[in-house]
Length: 173
Image 1 (spheres, helix red, strand yellow):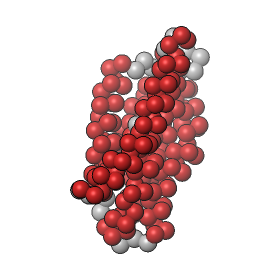
Image 2 (image 1 turned 45 degrees about the vertical axis):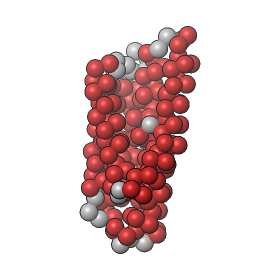
Image 3 (image 1 turned 30 degrees about the vertical axis):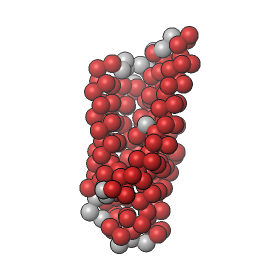
Image 4 (image 1 turned 90 degrees about the vertical axis):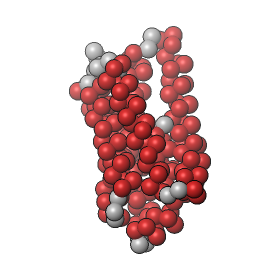
């Protein structure tokens, strides 16, 4: 949910980011889009690494990278720090997305797999919709910096669940 919400969430905070960082519209667009570019460019290669090296460690590393980068983005003192944090968030997201789907397909029995994938898709899709609404509300009542609190909280919960219950599967294993 947090991975998809992070794709669209900052769109509602463009003017706030420009003021906070004294940044041009071009810089703000890079801050918003660098996450999606990193996610899209690295989705397949990092998914393949998870298949070969083990899905659980790649998921845990991806969650840690995503969480730390999200916290850094929320605390960013400058546009440069924000750009780097968003880039790293995209790298972490590219580790999380394919691995979570691979864990579902390798863990659930065939007769339950369709339902599990449907839930995964629904939660991810819901993140895109919920991300826009929550982001708009947070920007209106608080600050754009609060947009990064929910992803960090979700990462902490996901890390606990991953350590406890995700099996370490590999391609062909």
